[in-house]
Length: 67
Image (cartoon, helix red, strand yellow):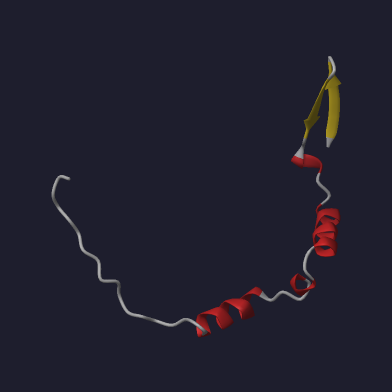
């Protein structure tokens, strides 16, 4: 990140070209909930699908007039 000052106004310029990915990941893991450390997205996805309650198709009405 590069910061600069022009005529008393403070401007911050951010460049994503110089982001240290490993440092960013470390910060996220240090500052997020501990359960994200052992996150297994496929297991979460399958568990979520297993809990789905199917109600059938929606009963929708289409109106074809000017209102």
